[in-house]
Length: 383
Figure (cartoon, one colour):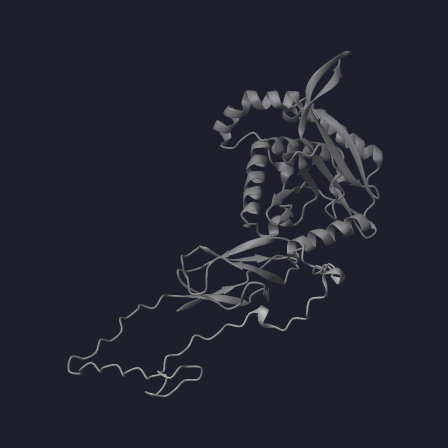
């Protein structure tokens, strides 16, 4: 009995995918629930697992575009191998026929000598071609250099579906929205001290780390309660205000940047945010995200600081109206109560759609995030 491997449902409005890679060879044995093929859509990459154990037959090779529901392979139970039938004892083994001679005895082969032994054939080389006579010494000129092929120093690789979509959406965002960025800086000293004091106890109680991203997510959620326009979107001539915060978290993967969504982030505490973010980031890097994980975001967080970025201007994720960029923490001299001190500082950047969000709202939102993170007790008290 054969079990078909079909292209699964890929999410709303997605009807086809690209077979990026078969993780098993044609004819290989596979286990139940073992990933066998990798698909890529214009929004994400995913693996399809075998529904049964058996032997794999590939119906559609890598590089094929396939529609939802299409059968791209099948898994059949391995047929038992049977030894070849041995010759019956009553039948004597037939002797092998003698090899035919290449020439008859005494016959001369072309190029051979009189005793029938073949002379080795001479292999032609480039030096056998006729060459023009060399010019006199005083007339010789250096040979002109041959032009190199146009693609000799480059490698052309087709863009993946995900990379093409990233490129298209970034261009669309800049063309359709009036993107403006405002900056501020956050003294991370109190937040770092809080993590140092409570990290082990927090992990023992909740089973997850007290991560920086979850603290930023909590501060963002609280600030969006006060400045809900940054959690809104433009739809034609209407403004759509979202009652919930569905927080996109930008995750860098081997195939490019994806933004899975923590749904209902406004209803989660810091431990819940840490679990949700960790789960989405892990599944994104393992290409295990479902299409629904990437839909419905209302605001986005991105952290270029993990790569050492000091300052950047993030681009909106349409149709969202705001994205908050985090950056690396760097010890810098700052003024505190008339004294110059060294503090762990982070630049933050808020890009927003100026068609919908006024400058005062954007700046006030970012200041509110700064206040919550510089005095973390406010996040617990929601003050």
